[in-house]
Image (cartoon, rainbow, N blue to C red; front, side, top):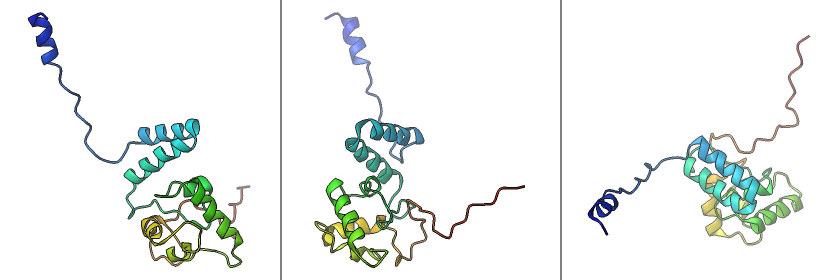
Length: 150
């Protein structure tokens, strides 16, 4: 190998990793596109991006009383089977909402104390005293549409 070629190889520097931090909007947008294209495997990417950008003490709080299957699957440790189990349980319970506190998830098939503790910071339930707005927000029945100006 010639010396000029060795010098060229020796001067190649590895690309520095970007500083750690929350993902950018572009990264989250990419995750959403991947979710649309790749389905469930993309959901894991979106879930990881949301976890990284929104620690448990911030606004990423899911209300299991109204969340869809896909929204439940954004929670740590919740895959398609557990999401289906949560929805099946909440629709079978006569009292609504089905979940007032994290402990109310205990009767759901395949959810135990360890899963409940893992989910607790990400849940927004009626008996919580957290100030974060639940996600997803569903309009209440008494929410009125603003009247159109004449």
